[in-house]
Length: 223
Image 1 (cartoon, rainbow, N blue to C red):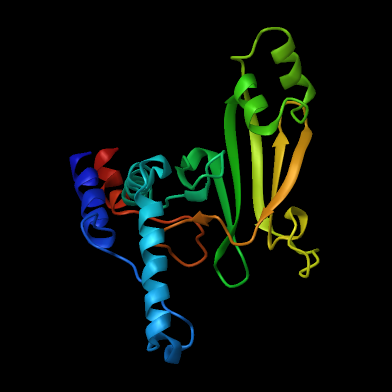
Image 2 (cartoon, rainbow, N blue to C red):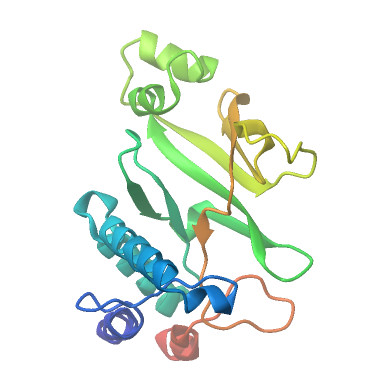
């Protein structure tokens, strides 16, 4: 356990040190990168992005550390990058591997995630709206069982049938569908312009989707 934490901390310090700028932005056109005004704009954008990452409410430090530990122990980590409920900034969330199911596209890139959310009836009503949740979840609210827990499935995957000229929620590049599992009820459909998950994998063998970790070398001794 100590070795796993040490390796995760080393990854954090090497890849994203808190004391220095560990990323930079560039234009696709190299000629633009030499333009003074473009340099100023990119620098300002880097500052905004850095501040958005390390704003305490974004929880980047905590969640990325959790993903680092999953990566070195299990070989795969799942990080969701979204917005806070009040749309005031970024929100990072680490997903437990037992609740996350991923798939690759034809190019070997992960572009599909199914995730299970466990919410109480009151939490679901606040997150999705009391009128949108399923019948069984609504009944729990009505019968003062607001602390009863329910499972919800969110599927994020490429949207094949869409109008690329329209940028509303149901025509974005990636679809997001949420289902109230117990009630077998579709709560709603929205979307993302870009894939909102970062899924590092330590190592993979041919044909594998989920990664292998250094911890797996020690698995026989652990058993």
